[in-house]
Image: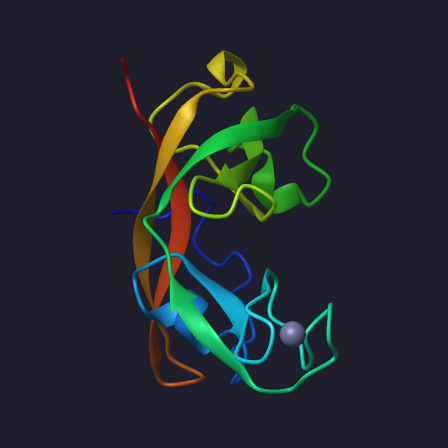
Length: 144
Ligand SMILES: [Zn+2]
């Protein structure tokens, strides 16, 4: 799928903690092997037990719009042709306490509403500098 944000928009800086999230083409949370806590974004230690034995755990990729905003005034000039656009906070179905930011790709920004069901879709991008194929998660509203 094409990119929601304009060409040239910043790419995520990939490290060992977020590599699966941005390259696997699946929604991934970080899980603690010691206490089974899941967390996002990925960190160096578990928020609950401070353990460092962490692993990626793949999720269904479905969720619910927990909150949203519509951006009408582009702060960076490169977004002047992109507004209005929406930013949504998605509560994952598998782990409702985990919320992930993104953009809704199949709905007008002003039509987004709290409670809408969404599923992850992925933008394929090449990070030439890092030599990586990225899969950036975005969200498709499930029409009912
Ligand atoms: Zn833990």
